[in-house]
Image (cartoon, rainbow, N blue to C red; front, side):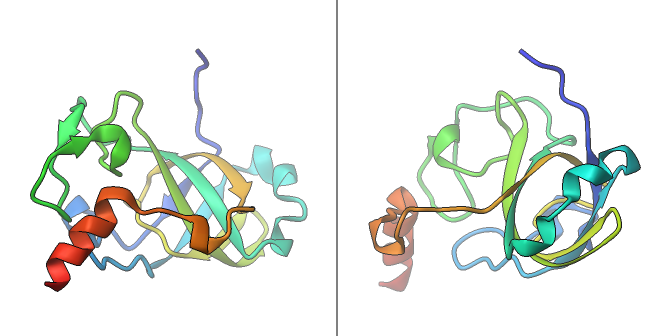
Length: 149
Protein backbone atom coordinates (compact mmCIF):
# COMPACT_ATOMS: atom_id res chain seq x y z
CA UNK A 1 0.00 0.00 0.00
CA UNK A 2 0.98 3.59 -0.32
CA UNK A 3 -0.02 6.71 1.54
CA UNK A 4 -1.62 9.24 -0.75
CA UNK A 5 -1.21 12.95 -0.38
CA UNK A 6 -2.92 15.68 -2.34
CA UNK A 7 -1.09 17.40 -5.17
CA UNK A 8 -3.75 20.11 -5.21
CA UNK A 9 -7.40 20.92 -4.67
CA UNK A 10 -10.46 21.48 -6.86
CA UNK A 11 -12.17 24.84 -7.07
CA UNK A 12 -15.70 23.84 -8.10
CA UNK A 13 -19.16 25.44 -8.17
CA UNK A 14 -20.49 22.44 -6.21
CA UNK A 15 -20.71 22.75 -2.42
CA UNK A 16 -23.18 19.88 -1.86
CA UNK A 17 -23.31 16.42 -3.49
CA UNK A 18 -26.97 17.08 -4.33
CA UNK A 19 -25.84 19.87 -6.71
CA UNK A 20 -23.76 17.54 -8.91
CA UNK A 21 -25.68 16.25 -11.97
CA UNK A 22 -26.35 12.51 -11.65
CA UNK A 23 -28.36 9.86 -13.43
CA UNK A 24 -29.24 9.20 -17.04
CA UNK A 25 -28.37 12.04 -19.35
CA UNK A 26 -26.40 13.92 -16.69
CA UNK A 27 -24.01 16.35 -18.31
CA UNK A 28 -20.85 17.42 -16.55
CA UNK A 29 -20.16 20.79 -18.09
CA UNK A 30 -19.28 22.85 -15.03
CA UNK A 31 -16.10 24.87 -15.16
CA UNK A 32 -13.57 24.80 -12.39
CA UNK A 33 -9.95 25.29 -11.49
CA UNK A 34 -7.51 22.61 -10.43
CA UNK A 35 -5.21 24.43 -8.02
CA UNK A 36 -1.97 22.47 -7.91
CA UNK A 37 0.34 22.95 -4.94
CA UNK A 38 3.46 25.00 -5.83
CA UNK A 39 5.88 22.16 -5.05
CA UNK A 40 4.32 20.16 -7.91
CA UNK A 41 4.37 22.94 -10.54
CA UNK A 42 7.29 21.40 -12.50
CA UNK A 43 5.09 18.33 -13.03
CA UNK A 44 2.71 20.48 -15.11
CA UNK A 45 5.39 21.15 -17.75
CA UNK A 46 3.95 20.53 -21.25
CA UNK A 47 0.43 19.72 -19.98
CA UNK A 48 -0.98 22.51 -22.17
CA UNK A 49 -0.60 20.30 -25.24
CA UNK A 50 -3.39 17.96 -24.12
CA UNK A 51 -7.07 18.68 -24.69
CA UNK A 52 -8.34 16.37 -21.94
CA UNK A 53 -6.98 15.18 -18.62
CA UNK A 54 -7.81 12.30 -16.30
CA UNK A 55 -8.11 13.53 -12.74
CA UNK A 56 -7.77 11.06 -9.87
CA UNK A 57 -9.24 12.46 -6.69
CA UNK A 58 -10.44 11.46 -3.25
CA UNK A 59 -14.07 11.08 -2.18
CA UNK A 60 -12.94 12.76 1.02
CA UNK A 61 -16.47 13.27 2.35
CA UNK A 62 -17.82 9.77 1.67
CA UNK A 63 -18.31 7.50 4.66
CA UNK A 64 -18.00 3.73 4.51
CA UNK A 65 -18.71 1.61 1.48
CA UNK A 66 -21.36 -0.69 0.02
CA UNK A 67 -20.56 -3.49 -2.41
CA UNK A 68 -24.09 -3.31 -3.89
CA UNK A 69 -26.05 -0.15 -4.47
CA UNK A 70 -28.81 1.29 -6.60
CA UNK A 71 -27.52 4.23 -8.65
CA UNK A 72 -29.77 7.19 -9.50
CA UNK A 73 -29.84 6.06 -13.14
CA UNK A 74 -31.44 2.63 -12.51
CA UNK A 75 -33.90 0.91 -10.22
CA UNK A 76 -31.80 -2.24 -9.91
CA UNK A 77 -28.79 -2.74 -7.64
CA UNK A 78 -25.32 -3.05 -9.19
CA UNK A 79 -21.88 -3.84 -7.84
CA UNK A 80 -19.91 -0.82 -6.66
CA UNK A 81 -17.21 -1.56 -9.26
CA UNK A 82 -19.82 -1.26 -12.03
CA UNK A 83 -20.87 2.22 -10.84
CA UNK A 84 -19.44 5.63 -10.03
CA UNK A 85 -20.66 5.51 -6.44
CA UNK A 86 -18.61 7.49 -3.89
CA UNK A 87 -19.12 4.72 -1.31
CA UNK A 88 -16.14 2.54 -2.30
CA UNK A 89 -13.61 0.41 -0.40
CA UNK A 90 -10.91 2.88 -1.53
CA UNK A 91 -12.63 6.26 -1.98
CA UNK A 92 -10.93 7.21 -5.25
CA UNK A 93 -12.73 9.15 -7.97
CA UNK A 94 -11.82 9.54 -11.64
CA UNK A 95 -13.02 12.35 -13.88
CA UNK A 96 -12.08 13.31 -17.43
CA UNK A 97 -11.99 17.08 -17.89
CA UNK A 98 -11.30 19.34 -20.84
CA UNK A 99 -8.30 21.59 -20.31
CA UNK A 100 -8.93 25.20 -21.35
CA UNK A 101 -5.66 26.69 -20.21
CA UNK A 102 -2.93 26.71 -17.62
CA UNK A 103 -1.91 29.75 -15.63
CA UNK A 104 1.02 28.85 -13.40
CA UNK A 105 -0.22 26.20 -10.96
CA UNK A 106 -3.87 26.67 -11.97
CA UNK A 107 -5.51 24.47 -14.59
CA UNK A 108 -8.78 25.91 -15.92
CA UNK A 109 -11.02 23.01 -16.91
CA UNK A 110 -14.52 22.07 -17.97
CA UNK A 111 -16.35 18.95 -16.82
CA UNK A 112 -15.80 18.96 -13.05
CA UNK A 113 -18.07 16.70 -11.02
CA UNK A 114 -16.27 17.05 -7.70
CA UNK A 115 -17.10 19.09 -4.63
CA UNK A 116 -15.28 22.34 -3.97
CA UNK A 117 -12.10 21.67 -2.01
CA UNK A 118 -11.76 18.03 -3.13
CA UNK A 119 -8.22 16.65 -2.88
CA UNK A 120 -6.53 15.89 -6.21
CA UNK A 121 -4.36 12.76 -6.08
CA UNK A 122 -2.98 12.66 -9.63
CA UNK A 123 -3.36 14.00 -13.17
CA UNK A 124 -2.73 12.07 -16.36
CA UNK A 125 -3.19 13.07 -20.00
CA UNK A 126 -6.20 11.41 -21.59
CA UNK A 127 -4.95 8.97 -24.20
CA UNK A 128 -7.29 6.29 -25.49
CA UNK A 129 -6.62 3.81 -28.23
CA UNK A 130 -10.09 2.26 -27.89
CA UNK A 131 -12.29 3.33 -30.83
CA UNK A 132 -15.70 4.67 -29.78
CA UNK A 133 -17.52 1.89 -31.68
CA UNK A 134 -15.77 -0.74 -29.51
CA UNK A 135 -16.82 0.79 -26.17
CA UNK A 136 -19.66 -0.91 -24.28
CA UNK A 137 -21.79 0.84 -21.67
CA UNK A 138 -23.05 -2.26 -19.81
CA UNK A 139 -26.11 -1.90 -17.57
CA UNK A 140 -26.18 1.85 -18.21
CA UNK A 141 -27.07 1.31 -21.88
CA UNK A 142 -29.87 -1.02 -20.78
CA UNK A 143 -31.19 1.57 -18.31
CA UNK A 144 -31.07 4.27 -21.00
CA UNK A 145 -33.03 2.02 -23.40
CA UNK A 146 -35.68 1.34 -20.74
CA UNK A 147 -36.05 5.07 -20.09
CA UNK A 148 -36.66 5.77 -23.79
CA UNK A 149 -39.52 3.27 -23.95
